[in-house]
Image 1: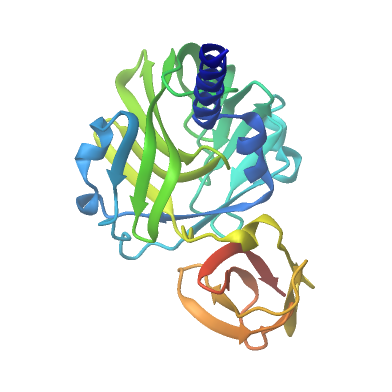
Image 2: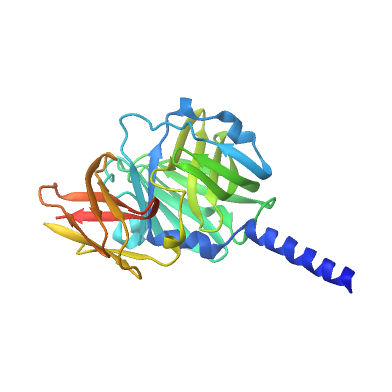
Length: 329
């Protein structure tokens, strides 16, 4: 009987560990309604040994990352493809990712999210150059567990402007969940992080590499390294506070009215009085307003602010629990 109990406990433990190292669609898709604030990093501040640190229980120390001077925080969010200027070109997509304040310089990326995968179906740049996939490019499958990998083929047409075909491209993407452990960002330490490596081949030129570090339980991207033909771009979560406490599990946050003209309110449901700080940032990532309050309805004055998009960060006690956007009319 003792041996049977011990075997059962061991099986439960192994199952729990396996589940902890698995990225699910439920976790990943929870970010489709939020805003992912990205800060571009100075490449010289990135530790290249992070790229080869794989395995289970590893530590990635990216605490030395510095923001790339002169670039704003990128506030990525998802919208319906039909609401974008060229969404009709991508009938296979159900989500478009973009920054509404930077559409003059950043492209729209078109995806199809489903319960079993994430595939890219195209992109459209401000100057008219775009890509349309005849065979979508698969970036993730669900569920996706540590040590799992897959390879999938893709095919697309590249356009140099709105109407001119410049090339046809085919290739493969191999994706591997090859690391699980703890990531240190400038803001602090995050556990339960998965490292996902993507190698893309194509018939026109050199391979490209994308490595993404993701909080597995929430599906939230934390840091990404991209290399294409020698050009390297590194981005990291611009507002994540890793000292999350019990507030994050039950506090619901709402900014209203939004859009607003003179003021908006940050409402905290399920909580009465707590030390709270709301910080408002412009599109350059500059902190332009800070409001301290200890109520569940925090007034944020916006009189005097130029019309446009702003981001806010809500901190309760010592812990950041929410970020969002405020639109000033």
